[in-house]
Amino acid sequence: MDLEEILKDLQKRFKEPYPEFYNRRIIFWMDRDREFEDEIDNLEIPDVKIIKMSENNKFRVKKLLSF
Image (cartoon, helix red, strand yellow):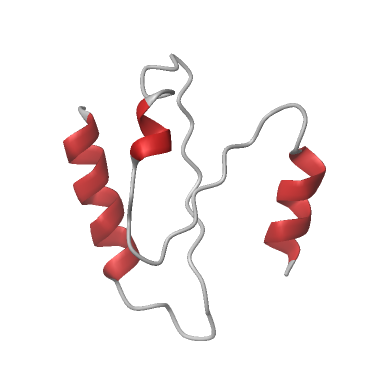
């Protein structure tokens, strides 16, 4: 899968209406081979916040997702 396919799929998922009683959509993306590590910084999807989790920010990410 290339970055263009991933971007199209993500855009499609974020455009879908929320299920009942939901007010946000969270998608976790695991890049085990780190093949998209550099490109993720250039990825732009309207109204989407991209958060890269690392060993140093796990608590911050947990806090963001809790609210």
